[in-house]
Image (tube, rainbow, N blue to C red):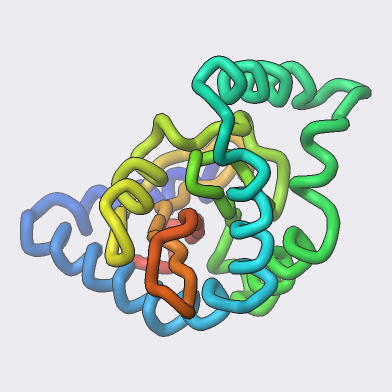
Length: 191
């Protein structure tokens, strides 16, 4: 509880003025460019998103909703057959390796396909479909340059105050959008 109070007090002061909010966006943009974009274009990421896009391209909203409902039911249960492939394997390991390299500044990573479905995550997320959230609708749907900075909020899954930096993942060969990624950063990283 003490950490929470310490985190919120400077945050409220930081975001109290419009100029400070602009500085916050600049800091997040700088963090994205300096620390994330290079590994987000890694072939392991591009290959995984491209492969899942081939699998999910024909999914209608009913199928997406069914998968999302299944995921939510599996969170915390014995049957995690939908969740396990997303949080294990080379792509999820790669994401966790990037988190480890950031020394605690990154608290969560979500890699999404063109439909907004999880391709790989650093840990279990509360839902499988991100397509109805700004992390996908303000990035992939916008195009290759789509970027969205979220507010600092308390995240139940990571138990930290974090801000989400979301951006479009593109095919390096064509420059076409293929998915999106959200990198959650500890709120203290920007204070």
